[in-house]
Length: 474
Image (cartoon, rainbow, N blue to C red; front, side, top):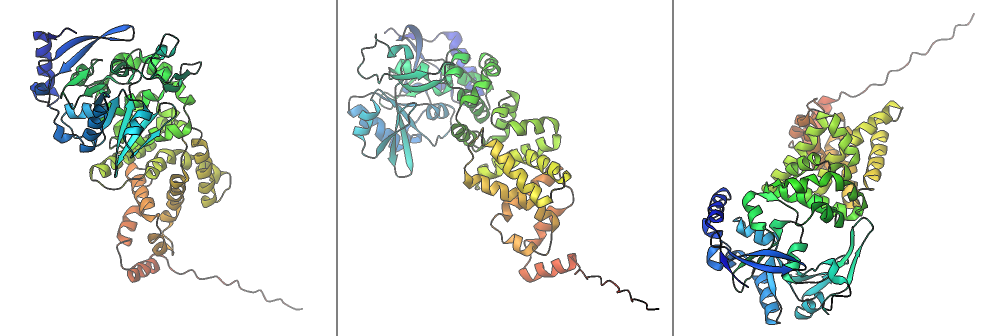
């Protein structure tokens, strides 16, 4: 295959872009271009040699290097791929490392005793080194390569789509070039060869890194129909990298968004965790609302957020606080974020039930059950999260009363989360009675002073004795 040097105009653009990305110019110049055939289409492969990019093996997991070395030793191809290559080119330090190979899952499993094959829709191999897992995927091929014309014995002949184009099974194996165009986002389709130290780009991923743009590979509508979750991935990576969304990619989202209703609730919950527990939940929420995707995760919440600025402020604040805790390396739980996202619906329903004559605690308990049950139709929320959510909500009434059992409440395992949620409600303007400040002071007092403060706050009730009427006799 012939090679040519990059044009002076492109080199100038690369130098400007490298400054914007705060990446050394040497990462981008002297790119070699090759023509490769991928299926029936010719693509332009950009090859960046070792001395012209900023990726260092020192920033790559030793276990990932071992996996690639052993695969090559078994006469297989092996490349670092995806987010790790993207982040390394952006000057970051990735935590997860994925490897792509032409070896089938069974062949990979045979090379590594510390591995297991997982997945049904597309089988992958997890190679485990202590707490670190290196994910190994076989090159994916085109669906049309699964027909009679395909004589490659490595193809698993397991591709199946629904009538709407949704991929139900995707175990079609292919070549490196086919794998590149089968990936979802251009910036995640970059490959690094740890033997030659070169970076391979088949789908203008480097260009989109320079433009700070999230772009779907291929026709956006077709790719979204294959897997609607890709729309959520577009939002997630745009928020994570602080990139803009490519106009063509963004234009296809409104048409394809209803397809998210076909995705199992369990998978959507997994996507929720990725969306909101990565340290960029506030920006993710904004983009989900901007592209009208939040309604397919939390339909009841969307209605309240659109018409209630206090509810919107509460949820925004919850996301911002969670992002800060992650940056501070403090523990976070999905239960708190879910409690914030669903609270406007719970509070509104509890208010309606009280107006119908329900007691406050009965109303909040019933509203919690109904809202969680409704939310479970979209997100399969495990009990380990739904039970703490209910406790957080029901605790709000107790914290607002500041009764004789205040000292016992402070000792409860859910107190801290419920107290934080009360502060969140006060910060958003939902409640303004100073309960948060009272509990902030109260929980730090010694137990004897807590009891003394309670006695001062609440005077003992004295029962009024009715005067008995004396019966008069004539």
